[in-house]
Image (cartoon, rainbow, N blue to C red; front, top):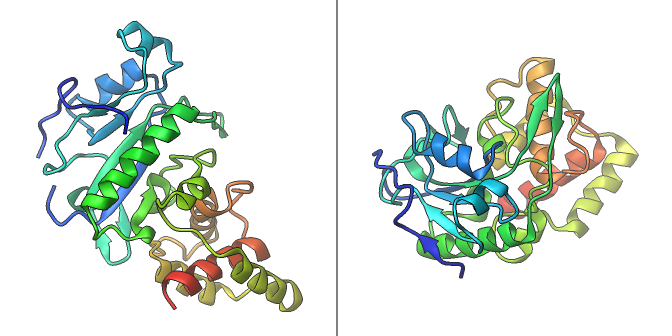
Length: 255
């Protein structure tokens, strides 16, 4: 496992136990600005995973991939904000947060999601597996992105985050493709489920559907799901493949 630096950039804010969620974020800033923000008065996170190609990381004197522990896991970090999953809200209280340095941007209504570096993802994988081994109450469906728990408000870690690859290594949830294809064939032949049935599926899986009563709110919900489970298309439009992915997840984890 990559060495974790427990000494630099420590934050001292006060996490209830047991830990039940692992939440991934992107920083939308370089290493230097991320450290400043995450050790300042407003936000914090347990772990920061730098990008070894980031000039500000190199300027700080680092040449290898490291992972920085900014807040002790026994303390609450302020990374989730207004958040909900399943029957829980305010997930700062019961989650470990991991920020990954990435220069994602949003300008004039357009997102730009740069790819993550392979060394970063290898470090994220090792860190996540270590956390999951120590916190068995974090189930696969409770390994989430900020966009999952803050529907319509957040987009991180974005569509370039390799959820499926991490699932194959034992981190997080994913649908079985055979089951998905069965639902997809059904929906292509008979049409996708109605709005109320789709909302039941979203809610069963864990998403907060309280804001989905409007067309815009429903689109935000669909987009949040797509960012995680259909990253090739995250336009917020419900279609047969998105519905099939959702149904296959519920079939697998909430039979």
